[in-house]
Length: 125
Image (cartoon, rainbow, N blue to C red; front, top):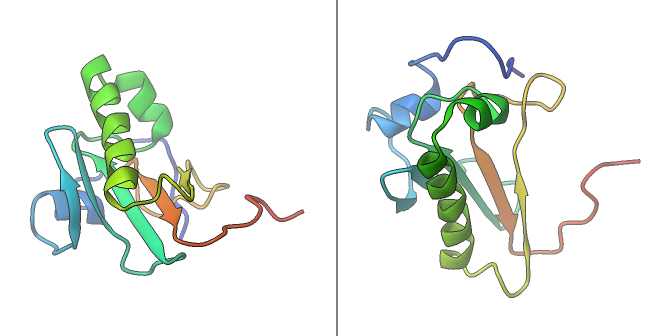
């Protein structure tokens, strides 16, 4: 069910609970800025999620509130995950849903990395 990309941060959202170790995940990458793991319902042969370790509801919140080191560290982590998954040569897609119209389902900023096949159009016509 889509959620708003604005408003207060919910410390009980599933990604916050994954970061705290309360819910298991199949970890791909972790550093001081980000945590990446395999999606439990993959939409492509390779489907990873990358989340910042900070309390950010959406991309809008992250870009307005995170420090420069957090922003740089997070996006470097996204690149590292794609590289670690062997996606650079054939290509991959990075997607961030923000708010209800985009279908954001977890009120914690995150990006999806899709790869492992030809992905087709980004949006249906």
